[in-house]
Length: 206
Image (cartoon, rainbow, N blue to C red; front, side):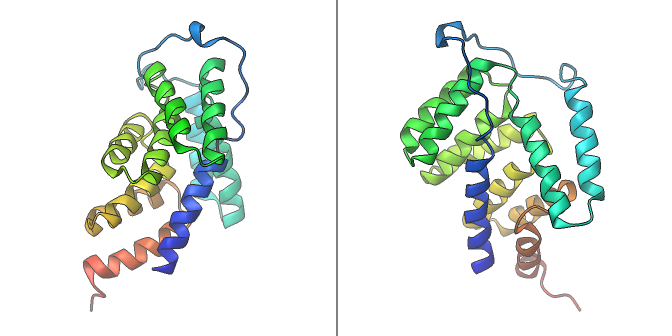
């Protein structure tokens, strides 16, 4: 239980910190125009190629420290929206999040999701706020949306697994933790949670 609580706290902290590097932007909000979700066909290299290479390195990494460094690089790529205006909204949302003003953070992340539905991190950050506001149904929906856009988003998988476990779906949580570990073997607390849940769901075996 303590391991799972520690992972939950770590998960929230990492989500908060990983948007610190979002760049400030210059265009006014009036210049922002919605764009359609990015499809796999549109999302071509170099971004896709960079992510593929980073995930290959993550799978081969031999230490937690090496894995953590690669995770940070992956998160940096995920955060690149390609729009200075979206980056500005994300920055305001992060400031509000760090101030624990979750209503204001939700306002900014709502704007990001509406204006750029193909940007997975907008959905991801909104899911984090909704989770902290105990709005699990909307948070779950947002995380599932993240994973439709970025199927390897291991932080979203971690959050989804945590919520499924809290909602009593231990089997579902176990499956998602295993999925997360298949793409990121160093995800904080996931291995311990997977081991504990496997005992609850599958027993100790013979």
